[in-house]
Image (cartoon, rainbow over all chains, first blue to last red; front, side, top):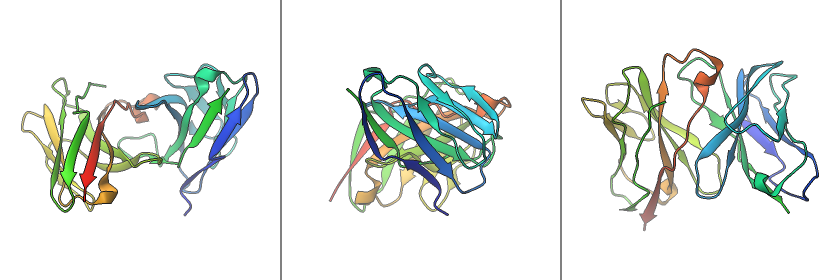
Length: 114
Length: 115
């Protein structure tokens, strides 16, 4: 299994541009989520999904959209990039939302918005 | 979720045991104690979790105080590869809604391992 994969690894955007961060998992996990990590800080939840067709907001959802059309994929869309969205983005998946299944994280996408 | 308190950083020598403390004085009876770690430039990875009894797995041991207000992650022989930020996280087993699978990350403890 490849686990959780994310593309791209690095991205530079100009303010106002849009882009999609890709996330895929091959473990048939129901639960997928997106976090952002700012320098020297812990991770904060952006959006999550408990299955195909179902998404919900996390702690910091503003400026981001998600959709879940398949079990495997959970893309994160930045609608109009802002410098405040400069961060490292991690995608995670878990077998189920039922406790206490561990979460598996991808390697991250480092995004810089100028 | 109840709050946890961890030291900002710790140092260890290679091949020696490491004890990483976590205080969670407001823990509830249904909170599990989880540990994740984040190696440099990588995503977090699961280490171990427990409720009341001490737990062991291939990566580490988790020692939980009798009153559950603190716990200690034990790495039995630190290696250079164990240098990472270690996060202690509480998760309520009764959170049956969709948000129950969220992980709330604090600042963690940065472990430095000296050769």
